[in-house]
Image (cartoon, rainbow, N blue to C red; front, side, top):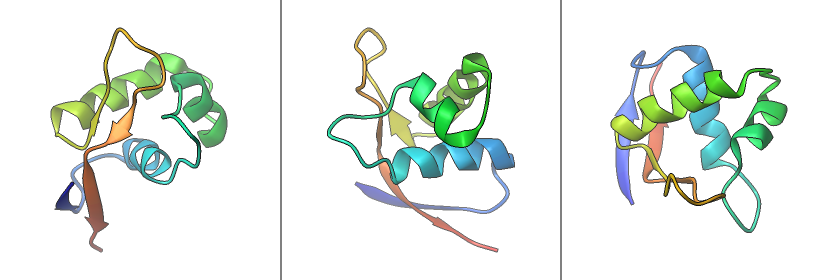
Length: 80
């Protein structure tokens, strides 16, 4: 797992989604609906859009045709 630092690269909700994935405590990766519930976001499309942004940035990955394969691909250090 690589280490990536970021500062202001993403909006607050995207950072919250990333942190939820990083700190997810379960035997499998979270589902989009579980992320919505954990973050208090009602729209699954909002979370999915942010996951695609994070995937494009190389911070998360998942097998799109399989459930619960979402996982972080980097250790993230946030800077103020």
